[in-house]
Image (tube, rainbow, N blue to C red; front, top):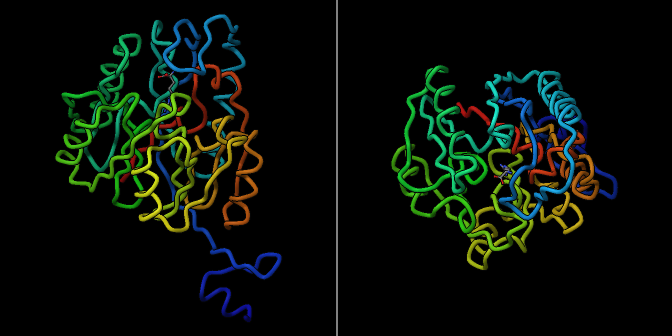
Length: 288
Ligand code: ARG
């Protein structure tokens, strides 16, 4: 293969002769909510332990590093105003699902987070979205991940499967329902990462048999991540198609990404992990 072939066919040689595709970044638009009032004062997932002290100042500093990483990559970040008394509001991904001019507002499974729905709806309306509410529980981009024009939708712990049909009707997207079976991986974005319009990574044991089969059919080149990476929420990443902003502790997954032609960028969100979330949970993407 000549340099010309590499450029034209979009491949770069890897050590050992294997060839990984060249990955292309596109500019993204995100919304984030500062962890100003972040604490762990209730436990609604297995990561949360109310006896563990939380350093809110450190959480803020870690979150701000993430925000600056996005800005440094050239992405836009809108800020949602955090509210006292809603400690999980930092997990902006759960606020809803945004595509085009439509905002599907979250309907939370637990009463402790219910108040976030109105707060996010207010921001969405002010940002110019047509806001839509679902009858059944949906926890936004925690369980609703867009891959190209296919919306992967998790159910089993939070989002109600019936909400998937409501969201398909409202957005016109093809929806693929995937069952989650391990309470540690209670949201889809803790068990599956979207890397670009046709590439994903996932942790197979988090899914039911049918879901695993379906993922295999849809994504023959999916990256399978091991337990060591999954258990530091290594799949809770945000990718722009090339740069993958991810929990720094997921070093095995970072190596897999590099071999696949992606550029992993590790960040430390250890304080936010105490609430059961990491990079993706803190990031609501505004899909065009
Ligand atoms: N404490 C939050 C909850 O249990 C964490 C949400 C994490 N967000 C996410 N997109 N996975 O609801």
